[in-house]
Image 1 (spheres, rainbow, N blue to C red):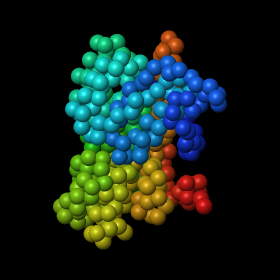
Image 2 (image 1 turned 180 degrees about the vertical axis):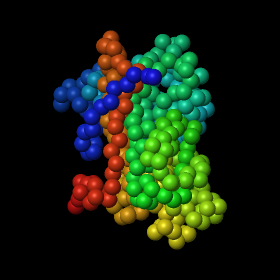
Image 3 (image 1 turned 180 degrees about the horizontal axis):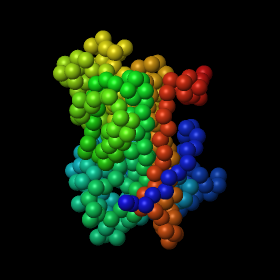
Image 4 (image 1 turned 30 degrees about the horizontal axis):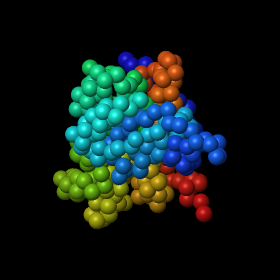
Length: 318
């Protein structure tokens, strides 16, 4: 089993900072860039990955580095080309949130050959031959367990549920595994009818939920693997007139997801801390550059976010 470091929870608030490399330097002084970190995220249409990119950029600036941000937009081939460009540019390090956890291994091995250290954030690489210095991510398995316990409690330990899935990425595989394992541990009478692809997007999950409802009109609950999936599912439930009959659990804790929890549309989310993932990734890279030993994996715990949390969240205070 891969060794890991679990980090304690910090504040939910993410302080916005200037993204320019010189923003953190002493006023009036210009600091020469020490190098460039290439970052390719799964998508920038999801605020979660934008938070990672923004916090990596601001943290790197404190250390004198620039971050070149690219987005694969769910396209493994596009992400591969972005990494090849990083290699040509001879960046100091590469950070990836893979579009495809298996396919990304090929281009990581190209970076290995070029002598450029590779790190993954949020989503891991599943190619055992590709060398990744460190993976910094949410404890997605723990979050899946939290989702199962919340749904088990809401349904009184019995019912028929569906999972809106996106199995192409490693983080989601961990979430659904945690969900399934925890239901078995609880000896729950909840029956998981199956997993349906939602591609992690609102539009696809909307259509998928419509299909689920047609096939299973007696559905009692849905576990959606991220907030866009949960919001798409809710839209389908609303059209079908089943928002009061189907309990919905999401994952992430994005502002739109938290708002939906506050309004009672989603029951709860195991929430992530993308700001911490971004900052911790850069700090780990700096330690590596300085010759320090870094663990192969650093996991940041999730926290279950409910309507009670939303009512006291500074996000919604005037």
